[in-house]
Image (cartoon, rainbow, N blue to C red; front, side):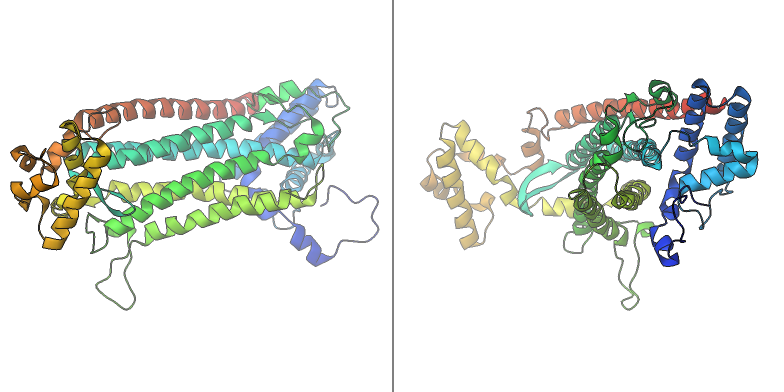
Length: 479
């Protein structure tokens, strides 16, 4: 069945038809397609295009299709050109020719963009729910490790001691930004395209505000031409997905490094590791490596869609059919990537003995030595230079900074005194970082409480959006 073809004499080339079919990806949009059809049927009833009996008949059939599909009985098949064709065909099989009235004044151009906006809104809720669960696991990990210390790094070189909890909370707040970005993307796609026609508008009197309200959109879109041509909202979604995947990739890389023999800071649970087909001793962090690689797929999706859009004149062009390949592909796989990373975090084992061993490197406290001199009145730049010379001397003599004699120290600066030898305590160093957001225990505990409050608010947002999605179904089908 085709929704076009009256002016054609020849049948389309078979290979071309197969190449142009979008049903495989459209199938992910079946919920949204049925909902927007129901909204349009309601609007056609209001406009007098459908009688009350026809409206009730069509809504009942759409509801049946929804329930059948939800139970696993697909109403689409590989011979359908797209999901719109599948719905019209399936409706006609249930109610006869009245099904063909539903397309009055409407275009597939507006239908697909409506489906995509509804679909991505739903998937953003799923993504943000998964993110919040991951963040809750990070809070728990921080609470469990509030008294454990570890080296912090810059340039992947030993830098300063920090609390393990502080490091995991840094991941939390990066993910908080991701949550907020997805909320922003949600708001940008909260405009209803339905009723704009192919590009010029609708001439049969459907109420766009009414349909927007039924489908849970904030309001209708502003311009019919821009509406059917617009895929900025998909790019925005992929941009936010790229930010999140970058973060997951960076976190994965840290855990991969920490799980190596050379670091030995953590052990990845066997549920998220695999072995080698040749080397029986291996335990590979494959789950994290795949998440790290997945980032490339997400970044590539944004670039590929942007490349398609850059040369398209207004309004609709068939090139836009490729949007589902990227939007659906990432929207369906991203929650899984988050959930797998959550599983790794939930089962992670810290090796505190190795962490404590790494903390024995006194160079981690070089900045504390510089601060010591600053507090005694030396300008920081000179203090930095003096400590640099101190470290160089230790390297040459192959000794620790704490092993330098007071006489040698005072040759570097007369400000050094016996209290210098009390500096070599990682816990004392950490507890000096009392500035807001620092790694002192009081500050980290404050971050934990702040994080808990944020996750409560995030969960409230997720639950409110899930309730709105539920209300859409109820408003259209009454149950």
